[in-house]
Every structure is written in structure tokens, then in C-alpha cells.
Amino acid sequence: MLKVKLEARQQPSKFWSYGSPVLALLCTVVIGVILFAVLGKDPVRGLQMFFWEPIKSGYALGELVVKATPLLLIALGLAVSFRSNVWNIGAEGQYIIGAVAASGIALMAEKTTGGWIVVPIILAGMLGGMVWAGLTAFLRDKFNANEILVSLMLVYVAVQVLGYMVYGPWKDPAGYNFPQTKNFDLVTRIPRLFEGSRLSIGVLFALVGVFGMWIFLFRTRAGFAQQVGGLAPAASRYAGFSSRKALWTALLISGGMAGLAGALEVAGPIGQLTPYVPAGYGFAAIIVAYVGRLHPVGMVFSAVLMSMFYIGGELAQSRMGLPKSLTGVFQGLLLFTLLACDTLVNYRLKRVARGGKN
Image (cartoon, rainbow, N blue to C red; front, side, top):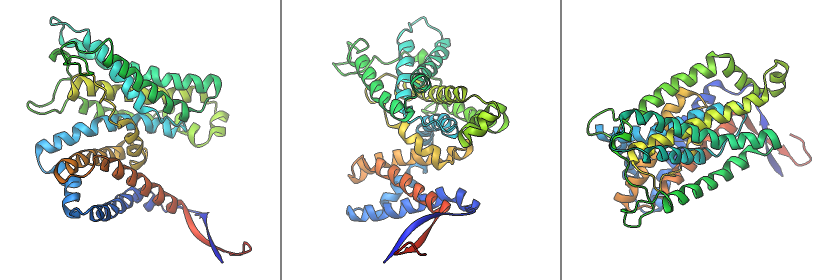
């Protein structure tokens, strides 16, 4: 009887290390075609919903970028965290708290308030995300708590904080009992790039973030220290780099970027705080980060791809009668196939005969 085991490759293929996300996408498409056929839907039309409709017009491209912006911002922060071997899985909670903090400043605005209020709104969002991520850093630093569990559990705490605010003190008295704040005043809204489009200056924040994160990770001593701490902790300590500093830096940067994304969303396309602010961006950004190979430029393309999944899922629901959960299915398929491809890039299957002989 033959058994199969995984054996590490002596030299993984550099080509397939970068080509793995493309292969994973192709596998996802093939599985998607099969899935559409099983559900009794036209596979070609189904793929059109995901890969053609989101890019077929200028307006569609604008909506695609609107969806991609928060995904990219959050993924940029997570890339720093993951490269530092700090597993921040709670970016969704930091995104929510950032949105709540930004909303608090926006609700304080009056009719006489000037456009300068946008700056405090953005800063409040970033600070809120950093404080929420700082809780994870503190518990990991002082009590050696597992940052995966802590950050993940804090997501559910953040959801409850959001619910309390929109069902309680911030609930709009003229909102027909809906759990939401009043619409933010126009002066508090994030400026738009074009008239008649939902594109805001958040896109510029994302592009600046890509360039800034590339500089930080690959052109500064601090970024080098972060990555060395993740790849070789012993070498990092020998070189005199502080693991505590790396922990706090990674979590504060990722929390700040997630909070920034939350602020730009509530003061931008959404325009008010509602229970539906949590759209799963924090979790989807984990996939964006890994599909983009934790590289700022690569994450631009993976963020666009993930936003296509979001828009395609909504279109498939409205036009083809498919469940909205199809978005999550495609996201999960992409992650699963990516992990499978990465495994086969770094390991090979080896047959082992009974008794342990090859």
C-alpha cells in the first residue's frame, strides 16, 4: 500500500512563487464555472457578472475603485503586520472602531463648521483603529496573549460598540426608528474627485499609502527591522532590534490603516453610521494581502480583483437570483486555491511505501 507525503523542495520555483496567485485565480474561475452549472445558471453569464460588468463602463470602473480603496488601505497595514510575524486578524474591528470614532467627530459639526473638519474626522478614524489594535499589542506585550485570538475577539466587541451607538445615543430621532445616525452634513463629507462620481480623495490616500509602504518596507532601516523580526527572530535580537517595538509598530500601523479606511467609508460613500458598516473588508483584506504577496504593488491588483468579487456577487444576486453569499464563496475559493498552489510550490508529493521505504 502506497502512501503520499509532502516533502520540502530544495529550491522552490521563483517563477511559480509569483505565478501562484494567477494559477489560483484560474482554478477559482474553473470551479466557479462548475458551481454555476450545478446551480442551473449560465456559466458564461455568471462570469460576466464577476469579470466584465464591473469594468464595462466609466461609472462601473469608478464603483470598482470605490470598493477597492478600503480593501487596499487595510491590506497595506496587514502586510506590515504579517511581514513582522504579527498575526493581526482583527482588522475588521479596527475598521469599525475607526468608523465610529470618525462618526463622533462628524456628528459634532454644525452649519457654521468649515471644511477643515474633514482633517479631524480622518485623524479620529486613524486614532480609533490604532487604539483598538493597541489593545491587542498591550495584551500580547504584557501578558503574552495570542494576538490572533485577541484581535479576532475584539472584532465582536467592536460590533457591539457600533450597535450600542446606532441603537442608543447616536440614533437619529427623525430616522423612522431605523438604527442609524443622521446623515452627515456636506461639510464633513470626504471631498470627491469628480462631479457625479462617488470617487473620493480616499483613492489618493490609497495610492500614497502604496508608495509610502513600499518606501518603509524596502528602503528604510525601520522596515528592514520589521521584516527581519518576522523572518528570523533570533537574528533580529542579535542585531539589536527590539521585538517589542516591532510588535507595537506592526499593530499600530495596521490598526491606523484600518481605521483610516473606516473613516473614509462612513464620511465618504456611506455618509452616516449604520449597523451595515461592517462589510467584511477587514477579513477580505487578509486575502488581498496574501494574493498580492504582501507587496504594496501586488496588493493594488488583488484589491481590484477582490472588489470585482464584491460587485459581481451583488450583480449575480440581483440579475441571476443567486444568493449573496456567492461573494464569500468566491473569496474562500481564491484563498483555498492560493494556499494549495503555494503548498505545491514549496513542497512536492512523495510516495512512501508501507514500512517507510520510498
